[in-house]
Length: 331
Image 1: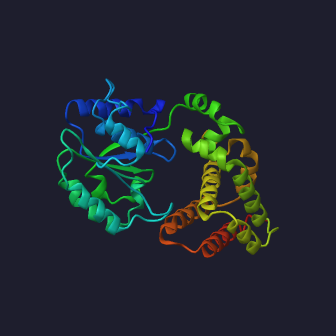
Image 2: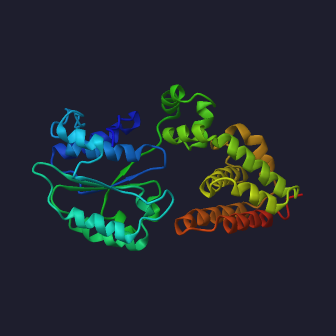
Image 3: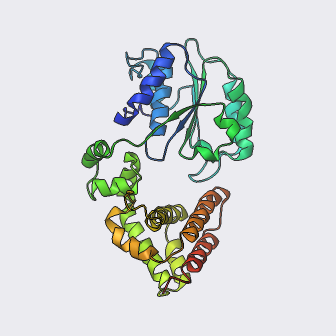
């Protein structure tokens, strides 16, 4: 694990935890929360490196030069453990948590912490989360449990209540654009930031994966379905060519914009601000409650991916729900 560089919008959170560490009051369990793309995982790794460093700087950052820092950078420090799904989008299972818990009861090296990072924490199924509770309630001295979550509401309340929560908000748009602009080769930094919900690192992903183009294609297919100009099965086949997570994410962004427009929130920034006119035409005459229910369907599909949902069945269901929503206003 390479030592991550600090991100400019992490300053307040870092100062808070550095002060707690200097006062020997660092919480034993932290929940880093905020939307995806704010660098919470990078913050967790930077924090872990600083806790393991034997010669931290005046700002409590890792020195990057001591033996501990070299072990962290090489990814084999004995007191740093990370837990993640075996595959992206899958659940963290109870056996993996039990193995982590068994390591957490061991004593750390003298004058050092043992650090455990769980990312994304919401990937733990309920049984796995429950297996972590006792460790959160009865921590071993100088052990830091760091949970990273973009969807903390998916964590059981019993887990959230046992962690000190550190919230990450989106940086001011102008600051984010200034950071983003030299890092993207194509696409408007402002448009990329908008489609990423204001999260700079997510905007980098949006540029690399062409979210703007992908969502434009999805919007065109939704419009064609509304006008009954496309065979629904052909649309499903088209969407199956992409990863299910990408389709659902794009549909969620588009539907969020449709809800904003249909609710009359014209002053609110859209994910696709440059396509406002097309989206306004797409949602014209649609029932707001129906759009909100379609959002619920998308959220259900998003959660179902953790349980190996069948992509074809999921997409067929979503297309059918869109056809039902647009039945009256589709022609």
